[in-house]
Length: 117
Image 1: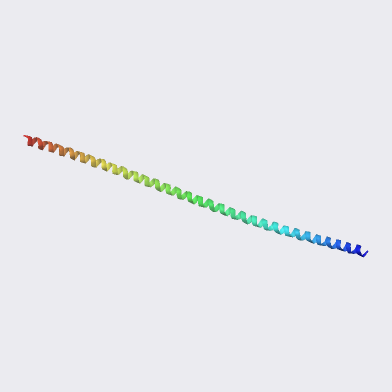
Image 2: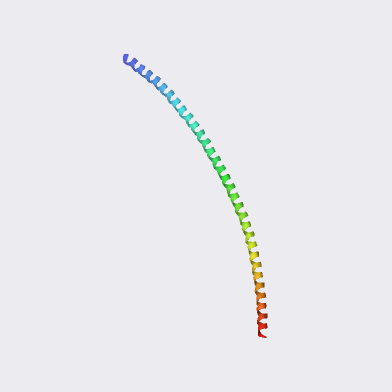
């Protein structure tokens, strides 16, 4: 009978320990789940912040590229205008030089004709 009572007491103690262990396991699992949810929410917030930062940086880079392109286009227009002016000046100078050469040639011919007489 003593052995039976000892066995019953041991089974009751194990059952009580088993119930306590189950409760502790459940609490630990809930704590882990809570930590995972908190970490996931923090990671989501950090990812959203990083994406927002990347979008802002891309917009800023796009604006800088657009500004640089506009500046380059303006410089190109100015260079083209300067080139056009330089070409016009060169044509005018060449025309004047040609006229001067024709005049000098006519004078030289006249002098040669005068000297031949």
